[in-house]
Figure 1 (spheres, rainbow, N blue to C red):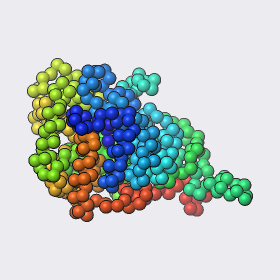
Figure 2 (cartoon, helix red, strand yellow):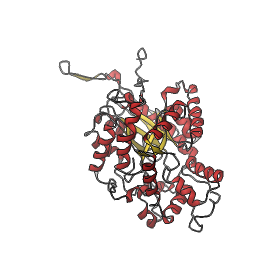
Figure 3 (cartoon, rainbow, N blue to C red):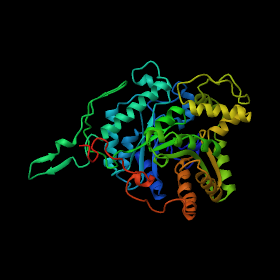
Figure 4 (spheres, helix red, strand yellow):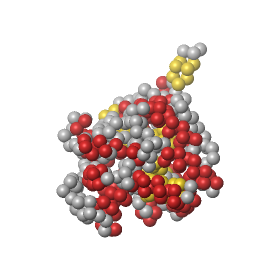
Length: 437
């Protein structure tokens, strides 16, 4: 979920929400729509700076870069009070945050939501974020993922600081807690030093759901070892199948089963009562992307200044980047493979941001989704609504009833926690296993 929808032009529709970057009531409305559809989770992407601030004129025309956004854990804490079942997943960086503060925030969100919290692990894709944390340069991908791997381990250890039954509240005996059921972490690693314990009881889910958003080899390895869910980019079913087999195949060496990781590629969905209605809404949005927005937005995604090029030119060679390499590489592959001009490229990329674009009638889109899951291209989808609230309402009122009719999607939530919805087991506390005390 993005405050202005997933399509670059979505915010320009007359009925579209524009002010969700700071108005909490908008999110209350959206969360209730999503929960009415029995959707697994409401996922909020986030960053630690304003993307594109070096080009304020472009920023003024393209708010999908999220120039303002409510801090997602704070926002989800508010939404926890007005929802009962939908998962609440928020992004936090392992490059510019600290394990203790992240562990504490997400434990609190899990308690506030009664077991519906999730942490989307990112290493930060915007190199300019470094300047907001006293750094001159953004760390390279290898170092960022080394930090992330240690960071996630520390956070999980902190969530396991206390045994599930550590707090006795025995008023008669005057014993508030069992002193044998707390563990100091005393972690001293390559990047972090954390004593612990966490000043929070063990979260309702044991561990809030851990999500990794990545398509790079480093990100896949991190997800195979540590994550419950992976969000990724896959433009075609064949690419998704290759990714699915690859990331699931990495898990056995970590003592994990393939079903321990839920694979969710992004899907930008344009669905209508019939094919013509879907195509019509898509064309309207496409006409709201002028070259003055499309070209510099494509340049930012590629890490290249395109101001000296024409929209009819082919994509020039791309430089090395410290940003999102997997997405950038996908853009370059698409451009070379299909011999696209830059206008053709941005018109293909921006509606779905490199994710698969599913467009058509309710039956056509449901067919695609059913095929992807049946053919082991994914376990589910990270749905992207082009505009808000209408794009989300179309998913809930048109698409989901068709999936339910086919027996492919729940009609009621399976339980009370996000792990219940995703079919994931509650992890045991590694420090207080039976017989290990």
